[in-house]
Image 1 (cartoon, rainbow, N blue to C red):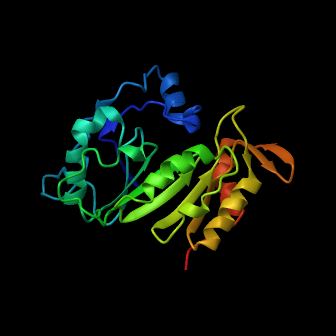
Image 2 (cartoon, rainbow, N blue to C red; image 1 turned 90 degrees about the vertical axis):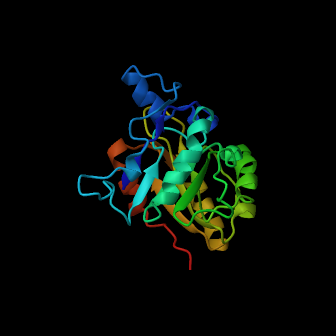
Image 3 (cartoon, rainbow, N blue to C red; image 1 turned 90 degrees about the horizontal axis):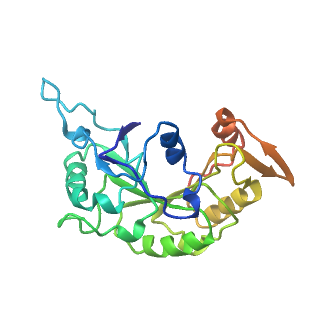
Length: 239
């Protein structure tokens, strides 16, 4: 999967951001993540080589704003052009996550109407408060491809009322790092059952470094978080 960061930097938005891995990594490097800036790769998807071919090959997924939030406030003046680039590269599938879904309509192109076929928007939630706040908005937005990420999952969450045929997948995971908030496997299984009931895809992406299962607490090394989630073999593909 290719990555496109038209801008970098982000502000902590809610409870799930408390131990943000990007803020932690940047802090170790002496970088202030709260400074938002347009990057030199802003036009990366439409850059061409000497033969006139796009440098980013088509028919693949591009992860957008890996080091930021597509709807962060400081990017308002750049966002419309970013949408235009995605429209131009309709041979690429763009995917981005956001905690700012309430800002979705700011900077939309005039011809957006009911959404672009090649864009997947993934709203992230972490607890019941943010689920009710963001998913009520998300449900009403004109987006062709929708996903929900519950990562880090901080408590048991009920999203049943927000799951319908427009949601393609729900992804669940915990926090990685030392002495961080735990992920309880019972919460994960509960979300899975909700997805199965509404025939929505489900993916267990990673354990938490602190992981609770059957009443016991385990410390899991970072390199095993995703592998052990896959080994649980509880993913669900909608039919």
